[in-house]
Image (cartoon, rainbow, N blue to C red; front, side, top):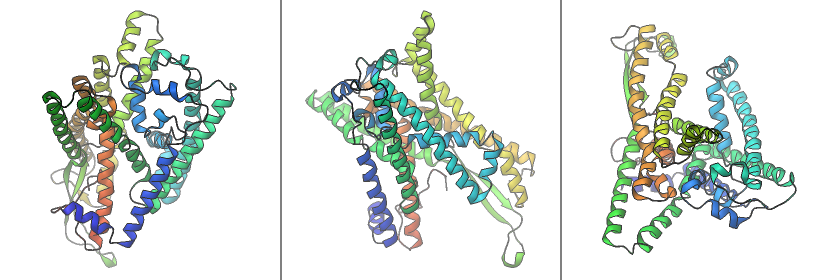
Length: 456
């Protein structure tokens, strides 16, 4: 009841209602872009490459994140992902390039410069990815052993005509979606890029329900086994969502004492006790996003080697349901979990800032000892968070093996899809709840308040 009342109250606040309507309208426009077919595509041949299972499992996985952009081969094929990739690249390079690190600390001017650099990098990524997609659609023999393509998806046209048309169309559509994301962030609710990704993923939910209906109702005629399986899947889905929410919102609170408290006139007095929230899942979905393409590229390279053991290992890695893929996937997720924390969590900077503010961790000396303590705590948290992330990431793959369900169904039981949907939904609801509480309305929960992925 509290949740429904919260949504009802949200439409009673004019400014919040306007933000919600702007967000919904821009999301509809974004979805329309993904329905525009790319000219020159043979839809019958494309349909044979995007039906589930086997060597086409990778294409099905990518189809979910593009909101059906692959199965329809739309000009919105790339969606917001080039911009997301550019953001990740700039964020990682900021840890090793002093100029980028300096921009992060230069306030609003520095953030604008970083945003401009990110957009330029995103355009470059768009051009390369669109050209590669056009080349594969026109000449599938380039990766026939990897994706299992057996016929050209693109009609025979001028050798340069189709690639140029594809690059212009997909890059323009991606830039338009980037603009929509910025408008949602500025005038709507939440982060525009994250919302677009979430909408792309959830847009495949009706397809998943249709696949379940076809498998357990049409084919099995609702026999006792089918009913039991559907009930177990529904129960398992609820459990997985609950676990994902706990993993997303979990924090380790580190007590912080402040020896001074600034007041008007520059005076200071008293002691203040606060907490520093360290997120259990500090990395978010980054380890999964890094692990998947690395395995696919590694598998493709190994399959080019003629030596049989190496070639066979590449074949094992390219099979999403194979034990070789599962083991490598798990290893890379844990590796990138610690790698991301090591590059993004700077215990020394946090310790220095606490010292400058006159704050300290009770029982720990300020300075180097505090940095070592925070680093040790974060390492333990990362181990727990990485293990939870590993479980969530492997659930869809194991589920598809056990129940033999299509990937479009299994993907909603964990992995990147569920983590993104849960995280973005919590962030968006938290922002809406803050508007409600400021205007003296009740939030979405009867007791307490929602926390986003920041743990606050």
